Amino acid sequence: MIDFRNVSKRFGQVIALDNISIDFSQGSITGLFGPNGAGKSTIMKLIAGINYPDQGEVRVDGEFPRAKRQSIAYLPEIDHLYPWWTLKQAANFISTFYQDWDELRYKDLIPFLNLEEQMIMGKISKGQRAKCKLLLVLARKAPYLLLDEPFSGIDLLTREEIADALLRGYREGEQAIIISTHEIDEIESLVDKVAFIDQGRIQLYGDAEQLRMERNKSLVEIMKEVFRYGNQQI
Image (tube, rainbow, N blue to C red):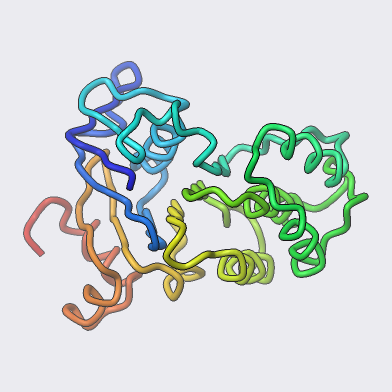
């Protein structure tokens, strides 16, 4: 389990997270929804051990995130692949760092995502690069998978392929997936739990299906309602 308790994080005068408490359990796919600058990426970086909280505690299976890096597969929003790498070179590099690398899964996902090992990162489309980045994360057997804005700036067809690949690689009951995005449509049907975040605060958190049934609305409609009324009771 990933556990946040009264966590705050500030960058200069900007409050990125404001006293949030939330947990992410095994066997669930959680959508972390909110506008740009809401605090979603900060949550991801704290889990990945890239940043530290100013107040409160973040624990991964009871330990500090940096001690659990082998348990966390993190897909950052930024493009982190060298442009001269082929997909195969990127895979060889990453596989040397993580003991949970699954070569069979890697080979299986290449044709599923319509990729080729000799693709050069600097010479392919943004959508293809997005799929390459996802592939390199899904090829690990990490208990925790963090995807920060995986659909940003790519076309609808590629988004659908990425969503399909997530379902194909998901190990139900063994893995926790957290997907941060401001574009809900593509993953509404994937998520078990949802957390709506704005201005560094969790505005609403719960079971996705239960929220849909209680409010008789889609997650997109619920998000609009949450952000329209902010911290007011809705």
